[in-house]
Length: 571
Ligand code: DGT
Ligand code: CA
Ligand code: CA
Image (cartoon, rainbow, N blue to C red; front, side, top):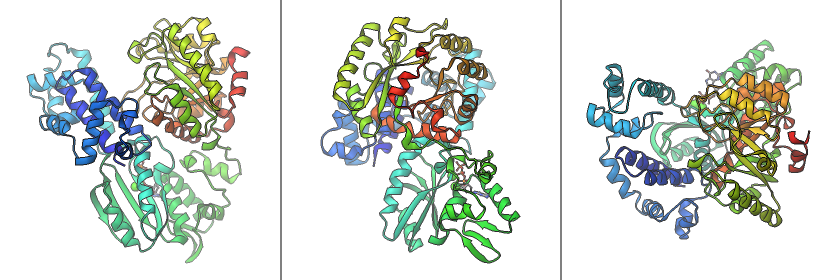
């Protein structure tokens, strides 16, 4: 699939155009298209061949042409042109949060800033602060941006799980097709569903090992080969530049290898200590007593030697799971297929790319029982917030669609919490809704805690959206006293969101676990802005499992009827 390659080029094009001062609407059109491609679950090439590119919402004529050009010739002329007149290091600098392309252009033209070292220099010597429109505050923000950027893209670069899943999924499918391959399973932090991963570790059973590894290193997604041996190959993947290791292991060691390479390191060390105490040796080859092989074919066999049940990968962080497992007291984790609904989806009425009908169709195909369409509220102008009349019309459309679809469509809204802590619609409007998610989108620095607390006092509010506001790629989140919010949420029975968008995952696993321990309910919502993004529901469940959540800790495991019955407003 070339979806991701094309997405990367469009993103680069948008960045470069922005630097050159291109019309912002054009720039955001490219960015939007890149995002759609990245989230698109089907092969874009198939769509192109069938002449159906324009059917994809958000793909206009100009972009469809560029996609076709890439598929036919392997390049996009416009991209080549623009990139060739943009210094490579400038493109890199554009990734720094809170350093806009306009400032960068100014710094480039007036101060000769060409790379990160130059940028640091003009910050230190004060010349950046003297540029028109700059000043100490903006420079301070840029400095913070650089720190975040270096943390994220320095030596220990990590990738958000959601970006990696499509790459790994299609790679695993490719490897499965090699002759002699019997089984392929990704391990490591990927299997543990960590929010970011440092590299990808894949295990495989098959023969002959050397042939399989060689074929792996020759795949079209390979940018660079780091190692190519008889049992292990290592490559850098083209679209994300992430390292991927493939190991071929013997059948009788597969469980032991899967256990070992799934980790985490801390979990493995604890297990090894336990093994030693009982006179066993455990390695990636199996469990041994002296020289004698005891177990290793499956993970269940390996854990059983030590009197342990199989431990779900998401729990393997040495956070007490081995001790509890020994006592037979592991929590009953929510399963991926127990999720009945998605609480947070944007439609075309606000800033989503798809109609409610398209969303319902896709969600039904995915096997969901219900979805909540939660568009933006009226004050959020830049995101197409709905005025009261439009909201009425939208709700009427949902009523009509509910006649037609088996899946239940709930009338929801992501309602902004205004600067004074009041909600963006009057109560009678909120009363018409099935799901009210209150959210901070404006005034990140202004009394966020007090505003959220005030919003929660309204019994018509069901859920608080992305409670910390952090972005994994580099935004620290709002200045919020989460402890206070959780305390009050518990008293009032307000649910907190696990926003499943791959760059948010907010609440994260630690805060979700705290919330659970306090008895607060959590609501997973994809925050999908196109139907491709509905697949991120899985990431939210991953967070829930890493937070030790059981089905009863989530709203999503309720049927929609149960959910409506149990709402705050009903007592
Ligand atoms: P990552 O790649 O940074 O997101 O995290 P992981 O957990 O995938 O770590 P990675 O790729 O370095 O290694 C994969 C697994 O291999 C790791 O989770 C546990 C196992 N492993 C690696 N190094 C060691 C070690 O020194 N001791 C033990 N017991 N296990 C290790
Ligand atoms: Ca790894
Ligand atoms: Ca690794």
